[in-house]
Each structure stands twice: as structure tokens, then as C-alpha cells.
Image (cartoon, rainbow over all chains, first blue to last red; front, side):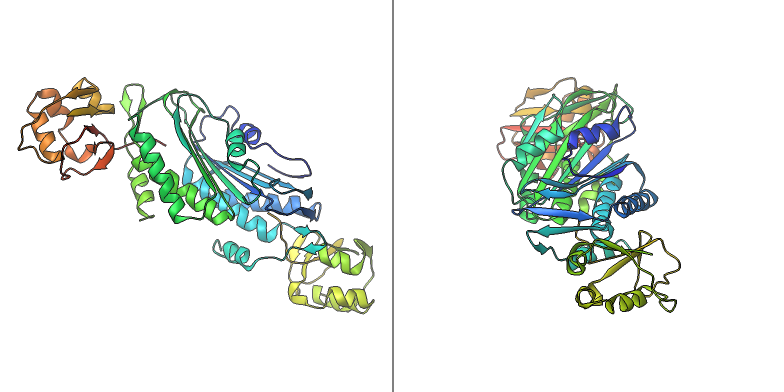
Length: 137
Length: 137
Length: 83
Length: 83
């Protein structure tokens, strides 16, 4: 499940949505990305972002034994310490949940069409993010 | 911060406790371990468990650039889908938060003096957990 | 076809999207960039450094040498910085 | 010294803890196990396979060849299974 939204998200509520009444999930990993120190505005390519998130999620499901995945990305203007992005992976075993969550973040950072602006200045892409994505090839 | 308790925990509340009003945290990773399919009873060595968790936390802080760590382990009788353990790591960058959370779980699984019982049968230790802990040496 | 611009490219070109009809000899993404560049200095500025221009054809990432085909929409943007 | 037993060892020995005074020639963890084993068949059963016995001296993990010193408490338990 993935969505792009301006509203904040609640990690516990999203875990509950995903675990529900299932009893075969042994490991849940969440990654929350937060705004550091500045005010950010996030712009995205509506339609393509959702498509890319769905593709990234499918890729993770093909590579790891996962029971559920949630990806939520916020857009709009965000203040310091605000949530930006949430990835949740649920699996029987922790190795799958951890690796898939890292993979999802690395791919999202290099493929999902979103751009951050700090005041009038567009944030530059980091080569360290390209390197991080490269290791899953 | 770490604690051993019979009560459940709330992931969002624990993240909030840890992030508070700070604006230098860019990445928060949580790991929740859940009971799969059976009813479990957890016994522990009170006193030593807290000491081990403190040592494991210190070891993670020495190895990665972390801003905060939370470890909560439940004891007592737990039903299917109940939470067992929570690890949270907060860092400026996601690589530190992800690696430290994996490390904490691997070390906790092989060092913290807790034992699971399923009915009358004690759960056996897994060699895969020893292997997972071994890679951090 | 519809052409969309995002982030710094949108700001430099001064519009979010437009409908264009490139000539038949425009066959790939790089060709479309070259043709757009002839439309004014704001395009030339936006596309000055092709190394930092990314493209998508019908909402799928596309390389500069990707064949255009008959797309519904083509988008241009800088390297992504979400997450 | 106080000796504590956990999990399957506690069940086999039938007690959580006890105070014992081993003789002076008991100098390491393995020696303490050997001495405890002489105290009854329940101890012999609990310590039958030393490969799956773990120990802690004053709440610190200790190997079987670790010197006992003058500990406040020694604990025995199977490999841990928390997390």
C-alpha cells in the first residue's frame, strides 16, 4: 500500500493497519525520514510518484519474503522535525524486514519523482544516494 | 534508554519520547518483534537483562553515529500478534539508524538473558541468530 | 504531445506544462530537448547541462537516447531528491 | 555464594536459587558445575550437556573456564531466546 499526502502520518496506526488480525508476522521494521533543521517544500510528479512507489514495492516483494509493505510520502511545506516519509515492512523474519526497508528507501530516494526545496534553493541530489541504490543491482 | 516490562508499548509514543523537540534527527528506524501463531511465556534474569541491554546500547553508540536509542523488552505471557520487543534508533543519516537497529537486535537475541516457553516446551536457540551476531565482530 | 517541467526546470522555463508539436525528425528524448532549446533562452538555460536533466515518457523513467514513440506526455526534471 | 537457575535448568533442578558453599578446590565455572552435579540426580540431569549450559558471574556472561573468584551470585541457564 502506498500514498502521497500533505497530512502527517502516525507510525503506530500504520503498523496496526498492516498487522491487523494476522498472527504470522514476526518482524516489523519502520523507517521515518524527518526534516532536519530547515523548512522544506516538497514538489512531486503526481501520478508518476504513485506508479514508481508501486513498482518499488513490487520489486521488494519479488526480492524478499514480505507479508506487507506500506510507503507514505508527504508533499507540501514541512517544518523542522516534521515527518517526510514512512516505509514499513512486515515479514516472518527480521532479516527480510530490515533488508527490504533499506532497499525501499534507497530506491525511493533515487527513483520516486519528488524534489525538495529549501527556501528558494532546490536541494541537490547526493551521489551517496546513487551509491546506496547501486548496491542492490 | 531501555526497560523490561510486562505491559505493551506504543511505537509512536516511543518515537515521540525520543525525538522530542530535537530537529537534528533525520532518520528513525524501529524494529518490533511480534509473537507468531503461538502463546509464549517469557522469563528473564532480572537485573542482568537491564545490564546487558545497557551494554548493547553503549556498543551501538560506540560503533555508529546515533542520537538516541530505545530498547523495550516485554516479559510474561504473550498471545499471537502481541509485541515482544521494540528497538528504536535515531540518527542524522539512515545508514547509521538501519545498521545500528539490526546490530541491536542481533546482539539482544544472543546476549540478553531472556527465555521463551511455548506451553511446556522451552524454545530452542537458533544457530542463525549466532551467525547473525557473528557478522558484527 | 504534452510536456511537463518540474522543480528547477519548471522555474527556469516558467511553466508547469505545455502542448507542443515537434517536427517528425525529433525521434528521441535528446532530440526533443534540442528542439525545445530552440524555442527561447529560458529553455536553453533549463537544458544547459544535460547531465542533470532527467526525463520520463508517459510517467516512466527514460534515458536521453530513448525513442519518443507517440507519447501522451513527456516530463523533464532534475535528479530526484525525495525521501 | 548464591546460585541462580533459569528456564529449563530451573525446571530440572526444581528451584530458582539457593545458597551454596563449594569447597576451595572449586575454582572455575566448570568446577562449580561438576561439584553441583554431585548434589543429586536433578543437577546431573540439568548439567548433562555442558554445551547448552551458559553461565554468568555477578550478572556478566562467563565462559565455563572463567575463574570464579568470590562472586556474589552465579547463574546457570540455557542459550538465550529473547528478542
